[in-house]
Image (cartoon, rainbow, N blue to C red; front, side, top):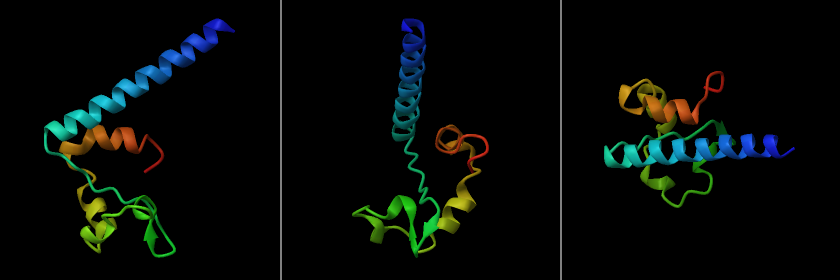
Length: 86
């Protein structure tokens, strides 16, 4: 059981380090992708509780679709939308 726990912990730790790296590289590079998520009941999923929602463009879903293929956000997109989840 200890080996399974250790592997699980190592996998989780590795994912955590990857997430921090992608976020910090994005901040350092001035890359702040607007990814609103799917729309449900007239509100984008990731915007539902955001206090800055009114600052974003009304067409934020279309904006994401237009920019999601940009090479500058490829590592972020791979992290946020693993294969098969786009």
